[in-house]
Amino acid sequence: MHQQKSVVLAAFAATLMSTAALAENQLTVYTAIEAEDLKRYAETFNQDHPDIKLNFVRDSTGVITAKLLAEKDNPQADVLWGLAATSLLVPKAEGMLEPYAPKGAELLKPKFIDKDTPPSWVGMDA
Image (cartoon, rainbow, N blue to C red):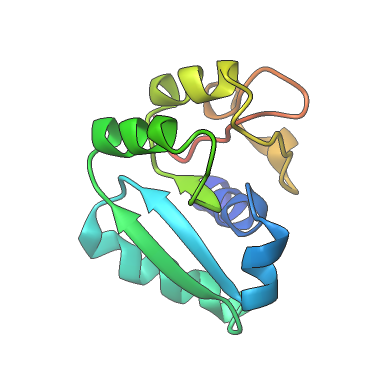
């Protein structure tokens, strides 16, 4: 499980990053991850990327998904993280997700990764 979380953190670093966000050294992360866990994940991410500031927008999966869909024509998030895979089906169908295969994706169990190549989502637990 630790290896899978490491792969997810790597994917987190690269998934859905916009060029503007990287130029500013900030990422806006839409997430449903529990608030008490965000600090630990941010610390782990910043060990490898100390120059990138993470700006979390945290809410329930339903609220985050609705926000994402409302912003379809003017996306505000650089990264979607910690949403249910089922909640990503509509944005995926709408072409709102940028496919990406993180390093080590081939090591994940099939239930942790979208079946498309490259995948539109990579899971962190199930």
